[in-house]
Amino acid sequence: MRARRTALAAAVALAAAVGTPLLTAPAASAAPAKLSDDFNGDGYRDFVMLGGSHGKDGRVTVVYGTSAGPGTRVQTLHQDSPGIPGAVEEGDWWGAAATTADLDRDGYADLVVSSPGENVGTIQSRGGLTVVWGSANGLGSGTVFNSPVPQEYENQGDFFGEDVVSGDFDGDGDPDLAVTSNSQVGVVLLKGPFTRAGGKSGWDSLGGGYGYLHAPNLVAGRVTADAATDLYMLGSDLQDGDINMRAYFHRGGSTFTQRAGEVLVPDDGGHQGGDILAIGDFDKDGYGDLAIGRGYETGDGERGYVTVQYGGSGGPNAARKPVKFTQNTTGVPGSSENEDYFGSAIAAGDVNGDGYADLAVGARGEDLGTKRNAGSVTVLLGRAGGLSGTGAKSYSQDTSGITSSPETDDQFGAYLKLTDYTRDGRADLMIDTNEQLGYEDRWGLVHQLKGSTSGITTTGSKSYSVTSLNLSYARLGGPFAR
Image (tube, rainbow, N blue to C red; front, side, top):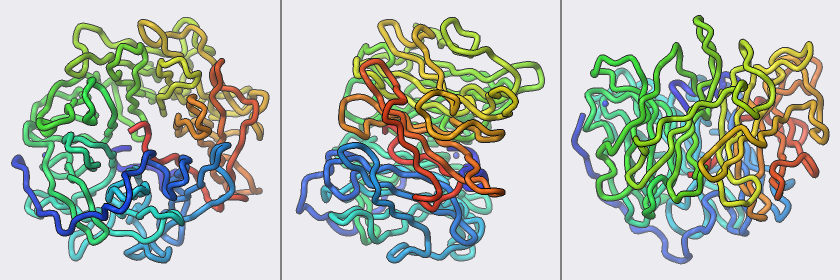
């Protein structure tokens, strides 16, 4: 997510708003999709994985849902797929980021795939988005939405789409997209509804209140109690002279483009990409809380951790100090060690159906015996007062019920997702692993651990591998609780 998304490499700030007219009205033949990731309208969530390669560039794999979760119908998409515009070119980074929403409000969710390295005309790395439209038959043809940023505000390319999230940010009832831009605009709001002919209702800049906004990590969700979608942007204002990062808060509604708050995130030596932001109501007070994964190592002995800023009626609650979790936190299994990278990936969701959001934390560098970087995932449970280490559980490929066994550099937990795929009111945990399935090559293996009344269980766990999905270096994608 992510200042130069590493998905394909590992498998792979202007002011005023500018409007463009809605080109054509969207189809009104169906009610909007009830689920933001149900591409064929059958009532089941579909599962998206990013990564792998097709020729010189990337691909996206979709596993269609069933009553038992992701099933056996698999669709692989790339720029050589029928109906997908463009062409496979080295360095496009097609599939570097993705999100889902019913953008044309026809009753079927649509898939938004970014390609921040895409050349547009003579402009190198201007970037763009491909919307692959849903239908009764699933995902079909696509439409490209290029960066709307005027060229004079770009620095040899916009890298538009290094991260993208969806939600009703302006509160008008139509889905919108927030998209990173490596330009003076900072982050772009594309306003819905969208049409298959390339129409949208306009665009705005979120960088107007900053000197030069650089915010490569985005997360959308419900923080305040109103219906509009809120947004946190992790980054910095390059013109304020402060080396520390901040999570800038923009409240959904009519004032969305204006900064409504911020959370100081001390920059203690580095900034990594990946899925390191999550929003969840960990204390069930009606306001969304922000979790930030800081899973990297520094030369001064700092080890990976997660910090949580609790929310309030106006966004981040300044009256509550952020809470820090490490593997040395009471109740958290294991211990903090060099190069564990605890917090290198996080995801929020209610795994036991008690109404409190829980947090999964990846430690992709965890060693298991002699297996270096085998990886592990810890689930912290929400409760009155918020997250704590009490009742936390850790999972690895050594855990009974999880298929396969740990190997060096598996990096179990490099990417995570918590979503209720089985429609039982409890989030299922999807875990990406850099698994070796052949003699030499390393491939993607995704484990599904189901939620239960007692939390995540390995009973009935499933895995999705290269043999059935024809993908390498899996990377989880989709709505990310947006």
